[in-house]
Length: 136
Image 1 (cartoon, rainbow, N blue to C red):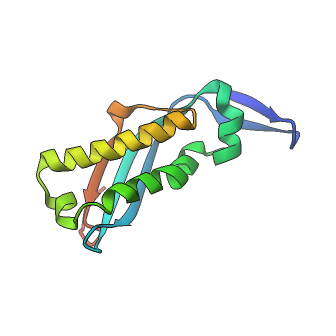
Image 2 (cartoon, one colour; image 1 turned 90 degrees about the vertical axis):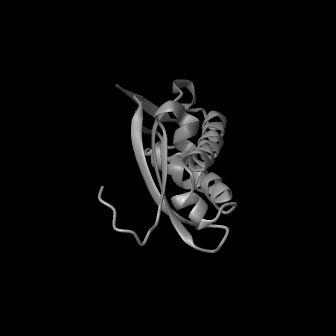
């Protein structure tokens, strides 16, 4: 479903999706040892209905992409810079899961601040070598 939103300052109608939207976010970040690691994030986001005007004002019509680019980028880079490339890409499964969970909790906290719902249990975070040859 969608909601029609009229913002009085601009006097125009804006359509925004209210149903959950699945977002894929891929970006490279610098690690503790100065190497680049590719972080692939897949999450499901949904705006809280009463806060849609504020969410639109902050992040635009594509609030999911805007949120990930403005807020999640900061959280991911803050976590990734504390670990080496080897820890992220080829570390033990428990260690990598703990790092991904730390990022997941930071993003969930940012979501709650910006009145966006996130399905934490459906969020996946993967660390890859950007030079590697991976299939989608």
